[in-house]
Length: 218
Image (cartoon, rainbow, N blue to C red; front, side):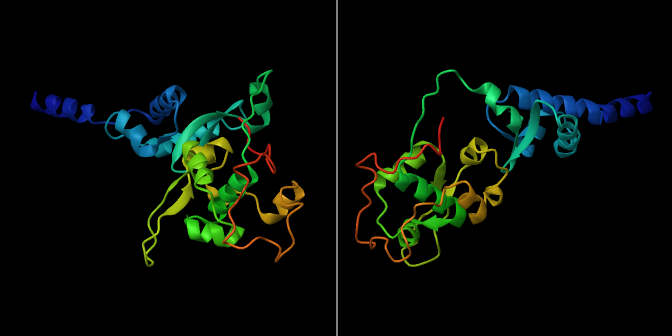
């Protein structure tokens, strides 16, 4: 009798079969509006489950389908396959444009993170408008990073998971290189070296519509 009780108690802590764990992970990702980490998945699943292993099987099962299991930073989500994104477009699209100042600032943060405001200004050659940084923060495409261990302990900026999710990137290392940016025309019509205004000048892109780009659209 005691042996039966022990076996029953052990079964209560036995993890479900991996196929069942895969179904659980699928259900959680399908119902989640935001990407979910492995730790968050396992917190919702029965004791002993291995969400990471279940994700391997689930990702393989969705490979080549209309919906993919995508890694975004340290989290996971179900997203429409990249080549089918055009099916999700609305008939009327409201675009939200970023100024050239915002685009350049965002690009510098993405490629040089963690980076301070002073470092951004040094790279761009102009003072960074507070409005530019505030706009990117409000869009939740950048966030504050760790303070640098330098005099003054300046705060740094890094791109967010929302930024990676928006552009379908697993991490910042997946950003296109200079060659790809040039081929896409994103580095054309740039001022020649040495012609950028000095750091004492203030960026005026926030006060005008000149230099706006449709690179980032909703």
